[in-house]
Image 1 (tube, rainbow, N blue to C red):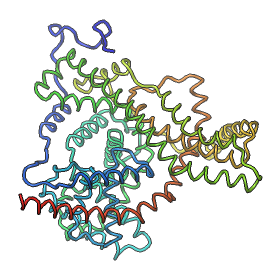
Image 2 (cartoon, rainbow, N blue to C red; image 1 turned 90 degrees about the vertical axis):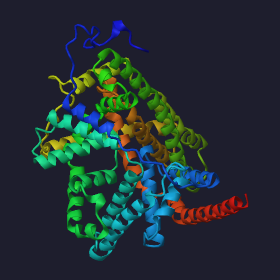
Image 3 (cartoon, one colour; image 1 turned 135 degrees about the horizontal axis):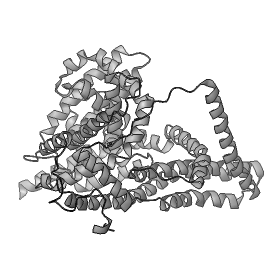
Image 4 (cartoon, one colour; image 1 turned 180 degrees about the vertical axis):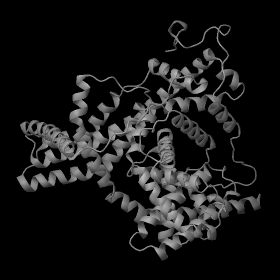
Length: 545
């Protein structure tokens, strides 16, 4: 509901004549200049075209595969690129003349739009492939026990670079720089014993994660660009000469990603990311007269209100889509196997199948996911007011802070760690003990009880995971009461076990293994051949006409 004039924030200027002259902060002015210089890829000239029939089959395959391998939507293209690169290495161990078939496969699967990728992208992509090919060859020659780890790191880098090359977003980098400048201004990590270089690295990592939830592979790439700005322009020989520096860079970033300062700073930044995203979207959608808009608080608040409302509606839609994807993923990868094992196991051990517990274990996972999804709390007008207050500080400066100072917490003593561990063990015992007692009262056998706990932990973990983007829209954390404290207190063991099971089982996904190693290579080869056949008949028909 729009906020009326009587319900506007107190710091919203309603009388331009009485208001003091506003000026934008230097960081925002720099951000405006960077957005005005945004580079758009040219679509002039010949582009890569694929058959809509082939594209439909490829898209169907990708959707089926990712129903077995849950990934965040914004990371699907990078993961697809890495998967294609790995398959090429497994089959031919060479990137020679691979750029065109690589791009065609991405267009077929609609990771890149049909008829939008120019033919001029082929040599640029091939140059990137050649540069990493030299590094992969060095890894084979010089690495012994750690060769697989280093090659995995290189494959992550190449997929992130190709993703950024094919779908560049300079405005995203400009937004990261804007957030970084304000995190540094607010001295968010001032209390931590870090060198200036380490502090800057932690700030950049946290800003990338808070704004775009990048995975480690993408973070490695962008931090590599910061340490080696000319990386994209290097030829294979020049890149190979940097082998020792690359090995050192990998270790430095790995240590930085595990540093506790980064985790704490990220949690402090992510709830403020909505302010920066809203500013970027407002600028991009109102480029004509943007300076007048940003300096008129009444007009700007109205636009911000509509922008936030759009975020809230979009978050609801994404939540429901993610819930469906998660339910399908859990059903295909875990529930089918579990239910297929539960009944035979009970028949073998007890001579009879407990139909009641089996029915509960069948309907419980989707029901739990549904309940946890529909009970999600979404932000409203009050949250928009808080976004506005932070945006005024961002735009016009002043004494206020945008980001809190992250307190440094020294390592706990062995005694306090032991006390906390015992306390956690107590909550673990009480939570699972109570569930087990209740289930035994309704005739659950040890087998059916095991599967119930399995479903409970996994579904709860995925539900919290898909609800997190909605929680990140709230500028302030939810006000706690004794009821919420108890729920969080006793649900933590369930979520922790679900996280361990999900991360562990993902490494042993039988269905995914079948897709990647038995189906994908022949299926994609068939599509490539069929695409050539269709192209041949298309040319013949054009000659006749």
